[in-house]
Image: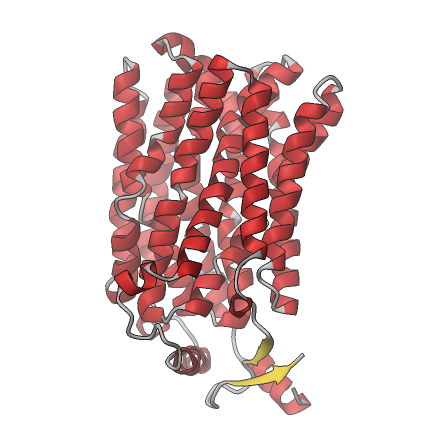
Amino acid sequence: MNTHSVTQKNDIPRQRWLRIIPPILITCIISYMDRVNIAFAMPGGMDSDLGISATMAGLAGGIFFIGYLFLQVPGGKIAVHGSGKKFIGWSLVAWVIISILTGLITNQYQLLFLRFALGVAEGGMLPVVLTMISNWFPDAERGRANAIVIMFVPIAGIITAPLSGWIISAMDWRWLFIIEGLLSAVVLVLWSLTVCDRPQEARWIDEREKKWLIATLSAEQKQLATTAVKNASLRTVLSDRTMWQLIALNFFYQTGIYGYTLWLPTILKELTHSTMGQVGMLAILPYVGAMGGMFLFSSLSDRTGKRKLFVALPLMGFALCMFMSVVLKEHIWLSYAALVGCGVFLQSAAGVFWTIPARLFSAEMAGGARGVINALGNLGGFCGPYAVGVLITFYSKDAGVYCLAISLAIASLLALLLPAKCDAPNSINLAEPDAPLTRTAH
C-alpha cells in the first residue's frame, strides 16, 4: 500500500465507531444481564423460595435457549430486508415486561414459562446486530467490530456480578429482576434515538465516510457474486457441509459458555464458602480477563487473516482451564485462577467465529445463515446448563464441569477442520473510497 493510499485511508472519518457500536453494545449488555441474572438469583434465595432442585435449576437456565430458536432466522432476514432497529426496539419492550414479571413469580412453572418467553424475545438479537455490523463495517474491520459488540458478554458480567450480589444482599432476588427490567426501559429510549440500520439512512454521517462505506461494501459483494452461493436458497445453504460444521462448532461452544456462565456463581459459592456479595466480587475477574482475551485474539486474527486458528486456540484454552478448575479444587485459589482463565477464553473465539459466515455467503444469505448457525448452535445453551444440573443431581459437580471441558475440546477440533476458504488469505486495501476493491498479498 503506497503512502498516498495510506493518507487517503486515514482521511476517512470514523464516526461509525462512535455512533453505531456504543448503542448496539449497551443493548446487548442489557440483554445478557436479563439472560444470566438467574445464575445469581438461584443461589441467592430463588431455589429455596420456589423449591427448585439442581436439575430444575439447569432446566430453568437452559429453557431460555429453546425459546431462543424461534426468531433467529426471521431476525436475520428482517435485518437484511427491513429494519433491525425496529425489531430490537420491540424486543426491548418485551424484555422490560418479562423481566419485571419474573420478579413477581410464585412457583417454578411460572419461571419456566417466563424464561422460555424471554428466549423468544431475545432470539433475533444477535443475527440482527451482526447483520447491522456487516452493513457498517467492511471485512478488514469486521473482526474488531464484532469483537467489540460481543464484548457485551464480559462487560455485562462485570456489571451483573457485583450489582446482582449487592441487590440480593440488600433486598432480595425479586428486586434483581424488577430493577434490571427497568434498566431495559432506559436502554429502549437510547436505542430509539441513536441507531440507524445502514449508512444510506444516517443523517449524521460525513459524506466522505458514507461514500467510502457504500463503495467498499459494494465492492466486497461484487467479489462474493462470483461464488456459488450468490443466489442459493436457504435450503441449499443448509445442504452445505461447512454450514453444519459451523452449527456443530457453535453448539459445543455455547454448551461450554452457558454451562460455565450459569453455574459460575454456584461453583464460586461452594468453592470459597462466601456470601453472595463476595461471590459477586469474585465473579468480576473472569469477565475482566474475557475483555483482554477478546481484543487479543480478534486483533491477531484481523492482522494475520487466520480465522480457523484463532477460533481453535481459545477454545482449547477454555477446555484446559475448565479441566484444571476441577483438578485443583483442593487448592481454592489455584482452582479460582483456573476459573479466571476460563473467563479469559470465554468469548475470545466469538468475534473471530462470526466473521466466517460473511466470507462464505453473500450479504443476501449471510443474515439467514447467521440466524441458523446461532439458532441451532445455541441449543448448546440449553444442553450445557441442563447437563450440568443433571450431572450434579446424579453424580457430582466435578462431572458437570468435565462434561463442559469435553464439549469445548470438540469445538476446538471442529474449528481446525474448517475449510481453508474460511481464512482471509489476503489483506483488503480499503484506502481508496471510490476505487474497486483490490488485494495485496501478505
